[in-house]
Length: 512
Image 1 (cartoon, one colour):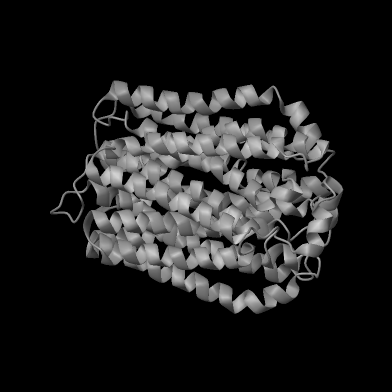
Image 2 (cartoon, helix red, strand yellow; image 1 turned 135 degrees about the horizontal axis):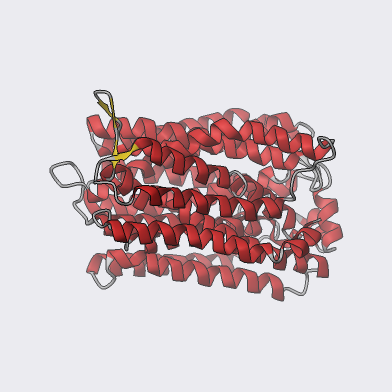
């Protein structure tokens, strides 16, 4: 992913340099793919396990082991935290490109993530939450960007198997996302929230052990032209610049924490602040790339082509990331979770999304490979940008399925209704998430390989913050409010997809 002196000469040649630098695949992709998919699986296992019980910990009563916050404050905090995770991918991308290189950034992020989970488990009350969530966000941001960029070097840029690799990567993410909430949700119900947070730390340590077992073979598997892109910074930043950036970030974090602790910034407004920060950061990233004179005409066109896809992805993630906010409350308050004599833990509802991904990912990956390679009766899979737009529209329809039950009494919504909504939304995700990741790495200018991966994660940052802001208006006790809420959620995605569809002919042409 990152490069040293010999590769920076190739990058400086513009798009042609990019093709040359990325034009040699690793000698053994069968080692690279399991290593990268494996570490991301374990990271997601710990991350989603922690996140599944966090909202309940925040709004549960003190006697129940929680902090006793209002549900709207808890869901807004989850939106702000989730946005910080993806905002941290900018820092992770910069560190990977300019300081450590991708692989060392991945490992550093993983250890910071472990420290965050331990804070949540061992430090009681608000201090543990504040320190733990910041560390988890920073560590996850660094790890995710580096893993994605490394995976982007496993195949040739024009190799159609890239989409299937990213589909498998997405499959690994969702193995962790399925198992994490099941384990921590069960532990939190029976042994307390802090035991659940401690389990997340153990799971991340297991993920690190898995990666270190593969590390030597993985390093040996990269070809000579690819290894510097993965193990070294693209263009090493001067130490003075590193110090300035680190200082600015530290001051910003300190100001936000102090404002929240002192009460100057109300907790329920943190999501709005994060939304403003992520939008500003995104505009800055696009502006920097478009103003860079080192970019060739084709590279600049690819950056512009990503803008409509960026907007569509934001609308999608604003729906999906309700999972840890408004939809978590919906599962807890509105749904009848009794199956016989067993009450399903509310946190387990967050495993519905990965269940559907596990069921559908491999068949879709095989179908894409078949249609892309030989076609079936002359058919071909839609281009990646087209799949992204269609996926967002489908997710909007999934949100609208919940409109059928807005008049149902509290605790009486059939669990099948929630299953249906997640199933439709997940079908949309499979055409936005993995395909969007692949498209981002394919469109990335050579000079900004890792930071373009971070730009994809910024769609999640803005979408998650937007989900947190929207969730403050969700009132499960009012059928009128709930109807307006789900109607707006669906309209956001369907409307964004309709606008982006106008630009699809041009986007597909540029992407080719």
